[in-house]
Length: 222
Image (cartoon, rainbow, N blue to C red; front, top):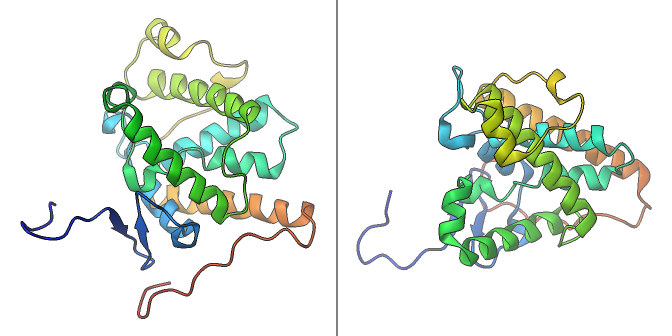
């Protein structure tokens, strides 16, 4: 819904946690994992053009990409797997734009997305920028996930999917895809985030802690 005529320009999003996230200058302290999980579970992949009673959400896609990346790169650390899980996290505020539309928008969209991802990484004690080797591994797993989603859910023929997304890694065909209700997708995303966070806590030095969250606004739900 658009703001009323004459209202001041607004470049922030109000979250259910009570946070107000500035899209142009996002602060890590305004990022909450519950907001990310809730939002991603309600953002549809493929513009919603997938088979099944529920949309295939970005939250479920993120779990799929992390599963594929961990299987194809078994020596990934918990930090690296968490970066994989969060690779599409900015979409909890900007949505999942299909690749053709991203190409039309060009650099401005990518700049906003990169700032959001950097803030999310810093919120959870991760490198602001994904290291190049890990970025390449994420892209590879992302393409494999896209191939599976395209052929199982989005109506692509195998030959067509291979042209756009390449050949999936061995063993990928054993992965089953069934779109989940939003509540299950959010809960599963949160559970995986917490499991990886626990692994990081066990592996990291005692001095390595993520930024402290600001106190919630008065009256904000927690």
